[in-house]
Image (cartoon, rainbow, N blue to C red; front, side, top):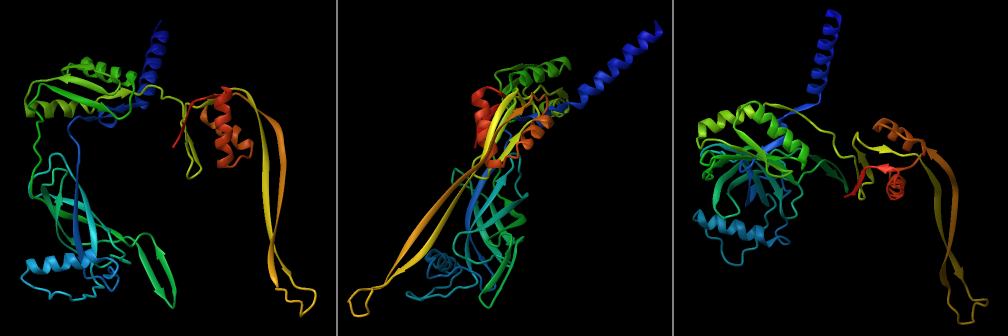
Length: 368
């Protein structure tokens, strides 16, 4: 009797450990509705470049911006002056304003060349207003740009590593206007799932209700609503506890993602195969062009020498043997079975599409 009890306790413990190993926190599965970043954008000038700025003859907006800036500083540029600016570049500045950012807080900005500047390395961004979608200024950006790329050129040859026309300024913008927020003023909090899943929405609601943390109910496959008291402090405390609750993740939908531009194929662990047969052949096309010269028979016949192009096309197909692919219960066996066919990524796309049409691929096929 004691042995059976110990066995049951051991099995329960192992089962609990197994379930916890496949559990995720609610903070990793959801986000709070209304708590998000806001995009900011601005147009500015980068100065101090080592002759790698915009070519003003091809980017007249750079010259116009410099003239406007100098006029605001009390300097008047004579009309018709042809400014040759090699150390200045027009740039676009982007940033993300956090939802609870306060006035005086610093945020990171990304600087990208707008004209034909060769490099922004060593440049300094001048004070640039950062505007939101409502055309209001929320931050001011300025500072030295950190460029991750490197390049050199000499004697008509050049070498470049990474991108030189874009950089980043850590803490380069200062928040000047705060966003209005209604957090804590309502009696409900909506948690938005990162992926639509009815099972996951129900499990999150059950986990919250089982802990006695408010009344939670799933509204759909994306949203879980929690009823709380309209108080900022209590809602902050409640969310801090809710987001750390572990929820067992259900089985995902079997899915195969094919990127037609890069030829990459990605599949999750739920993909399986039924027994099927695949015929794969290697098709090669060879195009050969030769230049034939036609000359007149006699030197004084009045004809002309003409060059003609002769094209030969050779089409060959080898292989094509019918191969059996056994049923696979997990992703490792699927990969091993497809690799046994010796297919390239491009050929693998066609094979997977044919398998789905034949009903032997147990997965959703998505082409991006």
